[in-house]
Image (tube, rainbow, N blue to C red; front, side, top):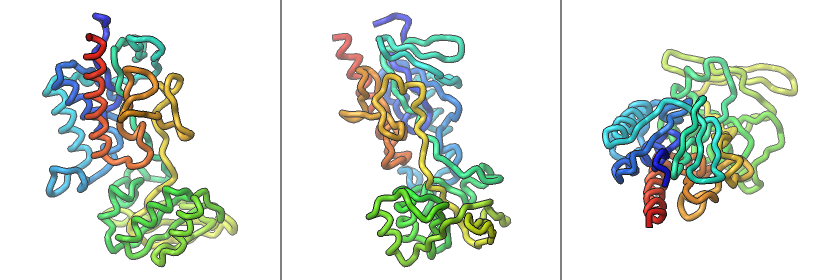
Length: 310
């Protein structure tokens, strides 16, 4: 192994990356973690998290990521607040480009996550977690017995609408076209749910604000141009995610949406490169599943290095 190379380099500091860092550091592998543009990942844009084990009264998303970062550093991980822009994974040690310098590493854990697509509404970022959400499984509980809207026309939108219908008094599913990308079975399931009302062809113009956050939305009929206000408590955007796989795409097998394909838990097609969390998981996208994959990736990286050393 190269004396100038990191034993383990982790790209991404969401639950997957930081859990991998904790396990790798405790194994004495001196991991270096590159935080990228969004240190802490998607959880830094959420408010209270009630489904992460160990917090009886919930925990704020940014606070959880701050604690995980501190834990990783305390056990020996080094967190660098820079972005990996390109990589060369054709030979080992692998090369990572960070600004104007090249970093070598014997193993790589990709934990760059995926970014939820949003509508780009006015004050959208400020209202995220205050009535606007991109995850029904994460935030649906806070809207129990309330009226909400879901925007989207694919399977994810149908799934989110059906999930919310179990909790909420009414769900309005808004889509820009009368035709849906959702599979027939998912669409029919939503159409048969008495709590789900369809609003097509409509687009959301803006969120309406009350003292504590969203209290309605303004929608436009895309055929007539007529606008109307709808009173509700929450707006869920279910228009997909963009996996942050660009720096690695040349060397990875990706699915049709850009997610890294893995086998045998977190292994990629390149020996010594592992992927964990949302970057390789388009199905669950939960903090706890990402953390579990981070643990797996770190242990697999450790075993890979042990095999190299003989």
